[in-house]
Length: 395
Image 1 (tube, rainbow, N blue to C red):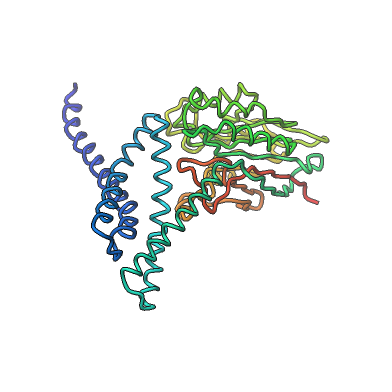
Image 2 (cartoon, rainbow, N blue to C red):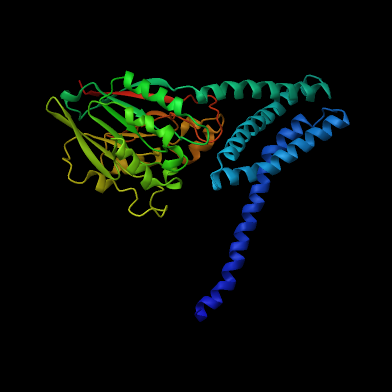
């Protein structure tokens, strides 16, 4: 060990300990809020429950709160699917209880102003929180597990040649094959895609949570997707936690074109369209060799007069699309918020939540709400979608 290393080593240890301590404080604070607010609303508050009810309710909240981070670590850190299923479901349930407990306090205030006293007021609030949360969770679970509905979007691209007018592009994204076996769901999605008779099918990433051997039974139906011109795929941020290069190679083995900072050309009626793709914006920091977002490489050698359809996982990547004169970017990542009101947190990080938006005179962006779901098996006020985009030349 050099003198410099000997001096720096003792300094590095306190920094690591300090970072760990800060993370621990933040984790405890988040858990205290997430579980504490529902506990205060349902168990404590002014409910005046009999002592046994109060004790049992308190112990239950404490035990679940203590087990939750352990299950999350085992599930998503050590790839224990059973732990993941329990932890993810717990997260969805407690999120809804937290949200509706906060809103329930507003109802309690209205009741207080109306002269309703405790324990009636607090028990009414508790009942509303439980009923609303239960109804939304049951409905949200059904929405998450069902085969996605088709969302039809018409997009006019002024530079598109008339020979390609009416080009049918089916977009799927964020399938997130994971701890819950959704092989049957995956086959249902493929059946819907094929029924739409697409010219191009695009998957804009977050294909799975887990490496290829773990999720192959769920992903393999994608090999049966039919398209008259091309099947194309790009990586999302979750690939970089799940063996990104393995997924690129597997999708290629299924007959999909992995647009790993590259492009292809589709032509019809004498007109052509560049279909390009870039890696997710997290690729460069992932440590996976050769993976990074590179628009210039993706477009290298293309005719600048041709229109460009770009696949990029995150809406935030639209900045690069605008800079490179892209006509239409297709993205996912946001899940449309997945569980209200998480939508508002998503908008802090992303410029768009969902839908077709314009970002320059030339560049448009379509952001899908996602075809699957991540983590909690619930979709609340954010339905999944299989998107059929019909491209039109300017009349």
